[in-house]
Length: 483
Image (cartoon, rainbow, N blue to C red):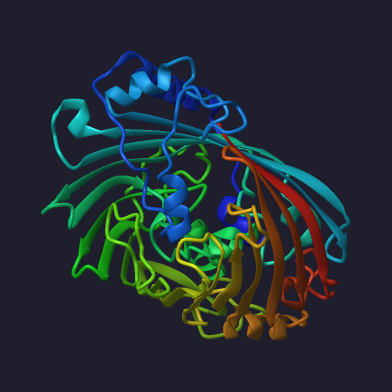
């Protein structure tokens, strides 16, 4: 098992012919119909105030290549024409080269890449239905996975690591009600776009700063998060200007009845149900559309608490169905089954320093913790924490520098099975990441990165559980291009 990304993404070869037809139909619909329109992309981590100012700057179709918002500009007038009908087309490419300089399974480096294509439609502009949004997105994943081949760590080095494939990612419709205070989303969804999100943690490259270690290892096939998604319904309501509630029910296994399907088109509803809820409390946040923040406004922050419950049955990590250790020669080999699995979590993002409300420079901190039962889960506790500085140097308003820590604790039953088997007993693993994002142009970003993992593999070599794994040191660079 390659650990987080492999647990989520260890797939077999996709049916490319089926996916090719799906992709062709998607693009055909885009260019042959003017009856669809675009809206804001799926809920992303809340932008800081300086980011909102940047995003609010007007975009001119005559902007030069180095100052335009997209590399391809208006694509010969296509984007403005689609925009009249409310259609927004987005294409991004994330490419990276990461190298392991010591420890792990092997030294060496790998290239990894991800192309994301997104189509958004605003139904009010399309055919007069206010408050409606349609979203479709596809992924093209390419390259090799450093964590699987060179590291053997639980805190996987890159958030884009996955099996090479081209697949449908999300496909949903969202409808707002009551003056946009309530909205309902239905369709194929990826939970890491809305739930458990930390704004400041998104600065980092390691997977565990995105979709954390605990759901990655404990939910079936890693849960409905990149590069997977599940059919479901999500309801979001603004209880007060500062308090928002999200709740959803989704298919509990994103691969479910067809684990070999990598096209993203199996639309599984044959597994158990995953229930998830989250409360979000924001302080000192601007009202919708507000751009003048004023010196009286305090430092913004967002605090979240949540839980999820999956009603499927889960194998015990140590005992069989007679109560014997699975390592015992007398064991039946069939694990004891537990009904349901659950986890509680909390997330905090808080700006702690900003010398001038009109300046981009600021410092923010984040923390995210979650726990789950140790009898049925490989990981019983995971946590992230870190600090991020925006605009660290004069004239570099769109740059960010950060230092983060990711921690994973192996569950007590999994550790007990190690002991019963005579293997090295796994404990915990900690990764520290230092990163710098350099905004070359509005459409091009370079990111230098270093990661050091302590007690790699939680102390155990995944290829030989009787041996330890040396600490790893990863360096690399990532580039993001918005087309």
